[in-house]
Length: 279
Image (cartoon, rainbow, N blue to C red; front, top):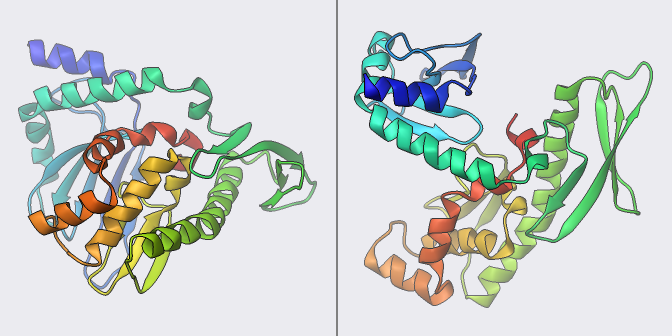
């Protein structure tokens, strides 16, 4: 079967771990890790299944560094996922091809699970990462040195502890760097907002609530400055229009005349985010 052959070719190298997330009302999310889930209908095809309380219908999405994700409603029969995947195999193959083409253009160092350098295009800051082991340490601490070094001290032989420490540091930096930038843009373009939340988000670059709270993804620091500002201006416009109406687009055009071009670039902007952030 030609479709199955194409899928095998596109997914065989993608050894993704399956995560089943159960979101139950009134309960915390439960994540069950399974060693690996391979499609019974298409050998070589791996995917992640997420069971969401907010999902009304099953949907497929291709997530950078993670691969194919199938989001299904609660009480959805997981046995039907394979049928769903095969039905959309053309879309899956095309989506994987697009991701592969972006991967091919990326700096190989960005795929490292532990970085030697950290560079923020948004602020033009750059650090050389130094790892220093401390005997008896049970955790890892990140310290910025005046000479441009980012020093990780402690139990550095544990790679996941190092990545967790780096992600916490990234959130702190994002809070101190992105919020002033958002405030400056708000003043310049005469917007107002109530408060800001900055955190690592899986897929959204930003969001805005009806009460005027703007959330920014810490990963914006890795993006070129025009793209990061475009995300912020988009959310600032949502403080006036909580939709994507004609009025919203007219307001956005006044603030960010190149927003359509920026929107297209943001679809592949994950290429700027190093692998250690997602791992």
